[in-house]
Image (cartoon, rainbow, N blue to C red; front, side, top):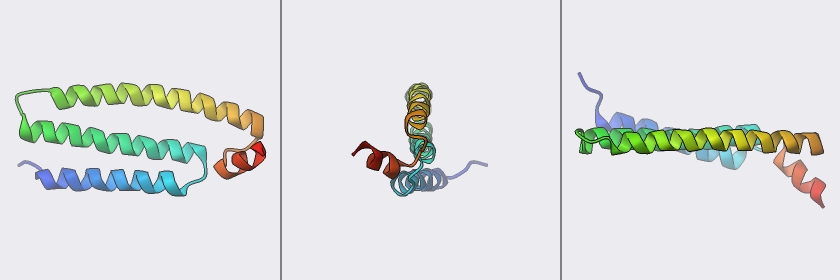
Length: 103
């Protein structure tokens, strides 16, 4: 018994738009980072699913997914370091408050 192709696409679409919504509506830097990770994971699901259904004998989608996972780990490490530095300087993680403190 195999899960239909459309189920994976619906899951990926939901993850993607939840990530977009979270990134655009949240003001906390950590939640914005988590939303960006959701977007990357939605893309990973698409790569793996399209690879499985279109080219089952090749692994191009899996290689792209591994590359994105590595890039996401590096991005998270750098982003957390920047967020910690901003918190030390401004004592807040709210994007709007940081923007107001600059002026």
